[in-house]
Length: 171
Image (tube, rainbow, N blue to C red; front, side):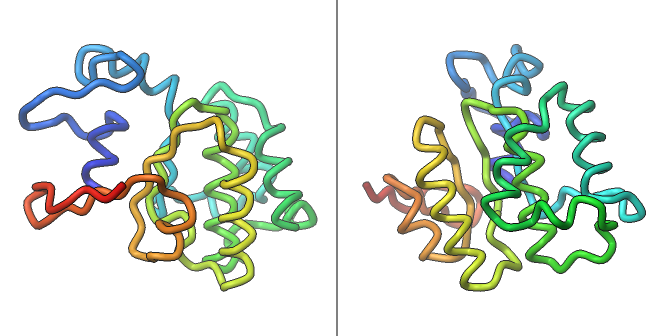
């Protein structure tokens, strides 16, 4: 999670250097923010607002369109919940809404932090299938503790040990 926050420019690195799509992580942070989308269980909603109102809010903040969110919500059978307050949502429904918000930007790189957290087995399968079929032209960097998610979505796996040091790389 910390690594994703550094790469998405939410945290400033203590040392070293990195680039995202050829842009320096520190010097060109604002450019990187336009090119990436970071989806995390830490993203919270305005609970008294409906899903639709939350989507409109985040679309305005991100300067993005609602089309990609609606397409994903339709695939996940959640369009009928657009006029419901997010305070009534289960953790799984919140996870779906968070990914919908992240997909609105149509970013080149998606940082996915535990995106299937709170989903039941069927919804998790739906989300994995969606990510596999619809986002095959995107770069996904995924942090997840569920080996099923990693096995299905990742071509390479980086395992870190305490302190952020690389334990091993599996391709």
